[in-house]
Amino acid sequence: MSTLPIVPPPLDDDAPVRARVLVADDEPSMRELVGILLRRDGYDVVLAESGAAAIAALDRQPVDLLVSDLRMPDMTGVEVLREAKRRDPDVEGLLVTAYASYDTAVEAMRLGACDYLTKPFDVDELRRKVRKALERRRLRRLARPVRRTSVPPEPLGQLIGRSEAMLEVFKLMGTIAPTGSTVLITGESGTGKELAARTIHLNSPRRDHPFVAINCGAFPETLLESELFGHVRGAFTGADSTKKGLFEVANRGTVFLDEIGETSPAMQVKLLRVLQDRRFRRVGGTEEIETDIRVIAATNRDLAKAVAEGRFRDDLYYRINVIPVHLLALRERREDVPLLAEHFVAKYGRLLDKQIRGISADALACLEAYGWPGNIRELENAIERAVALEQTPLVQPESLPAHVRGIRAAGTAGPDALPAGPRAEAPAPGPGFDLERHVQGIERDLIARALEQAGGVKVKAAELLGMSFRSFRYYAKKYDLG
Image (cartoon, rainbow, N blue to C red; front, top):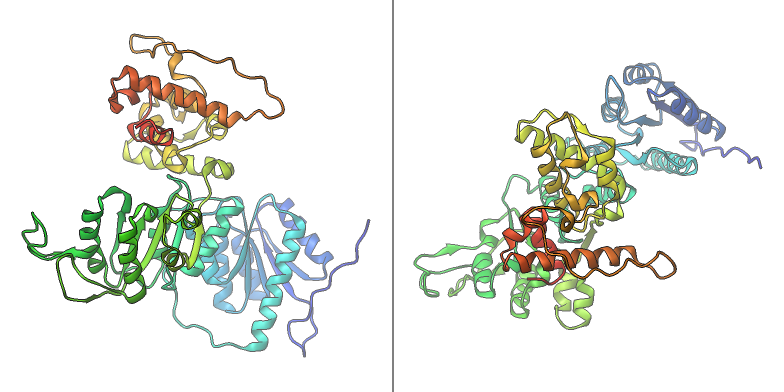
């Protein structure tokens, strides 16, 4: 069924001309496809096969919108957008890419890119975003706002992803980073909550001041209070001198309160006062101390449920949940696994001085099939181990942990093999079958038997299972095994 072309509105009321779109992409088929789609919608389209050709086109005639591939052989789409903005600060930009990271996303947004499209993209989504970008330019030109003269700082950070979910997180973080608003980052353990908090801080006006992080669940209440607020000399046994707390040390910077859901009701009251008044007292002190801080909190718990059950103060919850940022579990964004894995291969190749170029197709298939209950942290540990053990230029499946390859550690022969335990016959797949729950049952059984054979020594149990101690500790806590 054919449709009539959608003719975009004129850019100015007194200038009824067609919007001009510059399409830059080194892939001929992609470039021609986008050109055909946009011409069909009534736009004046200029095609460029490289970054240099795009710059030359900009020199010949102005454009209203740049649609550019992020990575081209001679220059990036961000560099082309920067040159387009230098010629016309009002030009809009839409970047098309198969790879995106927080650095490029935020830089592009601050330069004026209205959005990202990931390959392969939906043509209707492309058309919608083009119309939205041109309407935005039209309204800006009608309003004639005062433009900024200062150049924003180059963004920092190592968050990586190309999934739609991560691109939305990148955009949100780029928007909220310059503000001073309190942020609550949620997500499972190992999803990168502290890295996200650091990235927000490093892209904020507070980036030249301290970023201090504390795990609220790692301290007893009395020690946590001293860590956060400091104490005066003689406040308690062992307080031989006055000590500044993190809220004081972080003045004009950012405090990251990890696992805030683990705090006691009494500590929640004290945290609420700091958030409301930016004032506190050291333990044992009477002096009111003011502090200028931004607070970013994080939790892997459902705080809304904790509030409903009376385990977390509702007023504190509303105070920290000003801007929520949720990080998905790795199993919910599996398309990011190859990017993260390649990143960690490069990282540990440098750190361990190993000449490893990448990951074999078979090893990558193992990584993509595994569920990653420990999320990015577990993936990084697995890649570090693989790089350390690998003797070829590519990471092979044999260098990955056995459980990632889908091999039961209990099946390994040798003097340290785990004792055979009762094994239930695997149920046949069918209605009501829950594969993840079945696999978790197997994992719990293996970890319990490893602990039993190791006499409760977690380090030895981890060795029996061929796991890093960090991964073993995560699983043991997950299955309530100590």
